[in-house]
Image 1 (cartoon, rainbow, N blue to C red):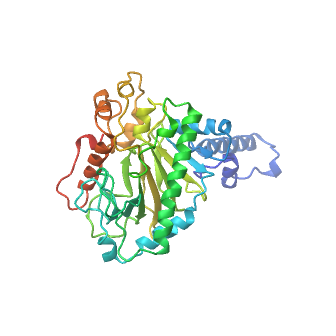
Image 2 (cartoon, rainbow, N blue to C red):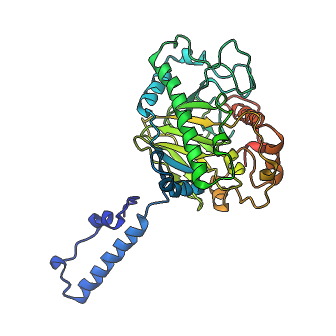
Image 3 (cartoon, rainbow, N blue to C red):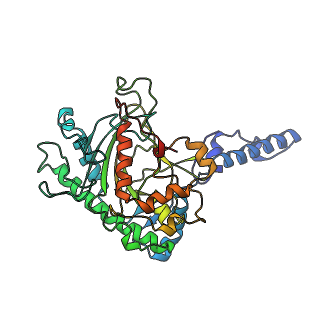
Length: 400
């Protein structure tokens, strides 16, 4: 039987069923048994074809009363699909393709490892990082953000100039990517404010991302199919992005039509996030989960590699709070905080990268005692240490 995920599942099974003879008229016991079997098979097909829990759709142009139900479902799953954002996704994706099409030496010269551990700007070569040391993440990337003046002193370890490829000044693709960063940051600000209002979160909606404008980062990715670049880390398991949660407030993702983004539902089954035209995806993060005292879920998610002879492109904005942000002590110590993930999710994910173990009160207290920025810098150092060829694999709080 077909494994359809569409509504009207009974209809999708009908072409695969035998016909009832005599124009549908049942004239004997044998034909009655045959007809009963046919309808039993159709009913089974309908059950098999029932859609998995879908990612709710939020329209930022809709009234708050209309958005409320979708945000509530999205908070439980940890993700929503977003429209009404005014982003030119196609133009930004095309600009990212132009960047990744540059000659390899040009890209490598803009490498992100510039001697500042944890600082995320510039080009990431294939195998340049991994959320889990066991995996090769078969992708190249590029990180950029706020255009910090080249001669201005940096405020903290997450600030600094973007490392654009040499000769790109004035290139249309660079101007488009710069524009997209600011437009996406604005859409993220509106989305989180709408969410906080709709869910009546115990947080100041306007302050969720305040102070993080200069440290939030855009990460562009170009994923390869599994058979490509076979000479890199042969024998190592290959994936697009290892299972992880996002450490910050929220993530805004624009993806091409290839697909591959998946998140774990409460039952431990992976749910595909459809790459639909005009939509972006918002994933809720660890910091928001703890700040909201469990009212929002931070989903475990991953990216699968594209099919053979296909590539995948995505633009991912990480929305940070201010560098010095700390979790209120009462939120960190909240005894009523629900578990971060179900047993089914933990069993399905296996090891995954996360900010802190949200089910451990002592681990949560780190967020009340240490600045968010310092914790994230440490996390990025761990991800970079998992690059191909590194002898300094990190574990501990990086994986659960």
